[in-house]
Image (cartoon, rainbow, N blue to C red):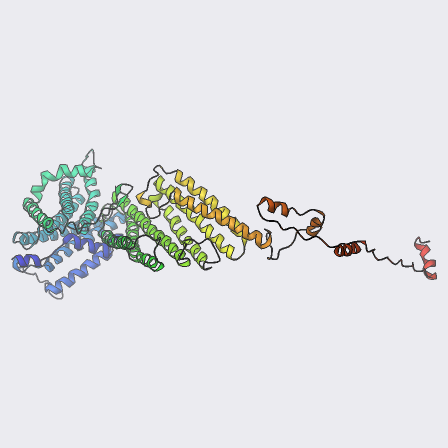
Length: 616
């Protein structure tokens, strides 16, 4: 009997949540889910050979022997319940649009049939539980599911007193399942149905005139204890069996290994209440642990060989892939919640703009922030790897002649990607709602822009475009002042867990500023040596106007400047008498005499006609 009990596995809530999320109910597509349930019922009946005959002749099936019950029989009853329930939701949605009373009447008939199928499912599971073939936690899931279906039917019939009792007891059972769950996945499944039943309890309490209808926890604590024994006669037995299983699991040490570590944002726990998200973040946690182990084993980036730096960059592939998958799931859930928020209260996934909707939007923003933070961390490590490859002696070489000319453009390209990540990070709601995180992000954006200008200046320097390089160094100094100002806005100057991916303080800013100033001085010196500091020159040094004349008439002051600089000045050799005589002869050579041209004699005809025009 014990072996048979281990073989029988039936997770009602897990199966329902998986099927609803996969086949359209996430977007309130009731027709698609109803057709899926119908197809699933037909396949299960064919597998069990429990069809109702062929043609129009209906053949009633005999009851199944309890000794022959399997999980397939329980799945058949579960999908019959889901099929009838989702058809009722589809008819209620049609009634809300057309106000046709026949649709509501048919919907009430369908949900009554769903309650009937749910009751049959509970009866079969009760037999299995009492015979020891079904685990207590799995039986509690079936009890909670049946109470949910019953409570919704009573609420639609406007029997709010019994409806709030059924829903409150179901909520209390779900709370116990979440508390005693052995894995984070099971805990998230219970949380999904807790969020689903919350607005229906609020509606019943408000219809009954409850003063604090918004406080669902207090309503559950008030209503559930006095109705639990009446609605769930086996509750004490189930609770005792679940406690024994939990104690046995804790002794074996299985519970602690399968729990997901809590994620925090500014000291508050990030709510992960969806099974898909929990599975995704479990992979993220595993990948993060592997990355931390690789970093601790290899040490820091400084004083490491380039090959090790490349390995550390490749170590980010696993966590980036896991975070990308988590971001995709969170985005789909956020979009689905936004679309489902316009649905009616009768919808299974309708929660309006309540805490569940706000939680999933916050989780999506948080997941995107973590993904962008890891990308930025990877890019900064890649920059360090490129710089270390270009020079083995110095991390950031000052001499442009010894470094690879392809390094600086590559670094600028990576800085562009980093800026794109940081700018996208700045637009997230989790960053915009936090003043400290927003200021810290702005400071990092300004710092990256300053570093990008520095490497762009080095790129222009290699092309001998000195004016652009000097302009970029001056721009980078402005960005440095902006980064300092943003850091001064932080309320706490200590390290922030949200910005650990990119440590930035006064030390890093001062170091970058020193590099910028030294680079600017170097560029100006090379520029002056190249073409005297002229803008737009072609590289050929042109002497200023009257350069030679001025030095012929004015004594050269360079000797005095060199003496003040402490350099040895060599006196020019004295001119010989022959040189002085030659120079005097050149200076005293008279200019050539200009020949005077004789004026041409005027012609006779010109003289006769010239008087007409005033000529003499």
